[in-house]
Length: 632
Image 1 (cartoon, rainbow, N blue to C red):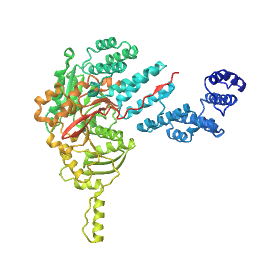
Image 2 (image 1 turned 90 degrees about the horizontal axis):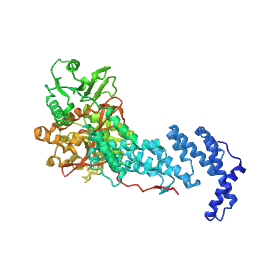
Image 3 (image 1 turned 45 degrees about the vertical axis):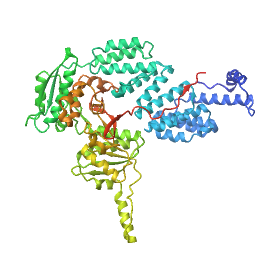
């Protein structure tokens, strides 16, 4: 774009300016000539910015060094924006801090606030991002859309999916570009897919558009178990929501992706240690799988299932796998043994897909057609870290059992916690074979230092002193990895050692999986994550377990694992193809990573009066002020 000569620019701007001046009173200290000069200057700056739009941030920093006042600030702003687009977040932030916002017009200040919010989001600080957003309640349509997108991204990062969905529905009508609207619809769909079923099934809205999105998601989620009626249900949905903004292209693609990823499961081979030390665990998985099989209403396409015992001594797993293939299986479930899975990940190819029921120690795998699934405790530890940070608990202490299991959970929690900006200030191991946890807790809380100071003071004064041990005050959460037996002793010990006011977070292992009010009274105020199966499960499969397995409550989660292993076979292609895809299972909302490892997003609960009560973490605790675009 060429910069107009000043005379031509004045001619170009004169008519709009006189129209503006006739509509409002002039400031007493500015003449018409002053206003024309300011307009000419602003237009020249904008033209210059456009001319050099392909230049580097360094170019604008140089222009800024040669300018003063508002002109300088605009060049600095352009440099900061280009640095952000380049991905140099630190430099963009430094450049932004050099800008004097008070020297700029309101519209430019909104631009500065938007960039600051985006930088905070890029720095994994979504809460700060929301705080930095413009406080103005009216703004231009593009600014309104950008504020909405940042709000939605920040709320998604904090797990407040419902707020993110509502925001995206609000801004959807203001997109002028079809591609942008499609992207927004994909984000809405992704957030809805990530909602736990217990939330989605109870979700409703007076907003017709949002209600349409909710019901469409419920229809597709039902199809994960039975997709025979999917097409008819979507057609019915279309008649009930004829004005819904979702495009026909979106609906067509939605139907196609489910049709194209349908899996024909004709024969399943299940390879489990049905004899030996893992027999009881395997029987629980087997019973869960068969319960799902018999409850499956796809009568016409029911596969055959054959079980193979991997517990037989000196029997090689791959020999059983090849026998299963020869017997006609087109899917294999198993093994359970981590040692065998470690070996399987080193192979190149499997003739038919294999869904393991545990994980290899290393996340990388070279094996094609190998999918790893199970109750991975490290996933739970990472989700504890995420919730703690979301709740602004940024200084942690860690207490875990001594041994490989405790070390794995400690490492998983600490890695994710520090990634999100948290700091681990103290960690201790305990012996879970004994019931006295005083020593590691004292060390965790620095109580030993307080005791030593007390003894030194008594010796110095030569008299008995009354005192209360003083624990460290710089931690605001404790991550506890423990079984329910250990946790029932550790939680009272925290209170005894003056740490009863520190929030304690844990994994599913602190909960037995069934109500035991008297035994769990000591777990009050403990927050933990767990399976939908144990926290909110109320379907027929839960009834089956309670009726036939009431004496085997310790295996309840393995029963749920068996249920999901059956249904996952039908959904593996969908999960593998789409990043947003989730399978709403009994063990969690399940997704797959690039290494074909399946992960579970769990629910949250807290003990109150000895009862574990589920609570919803997808709703934002505070409602952000409403904004609207200025379309005048």
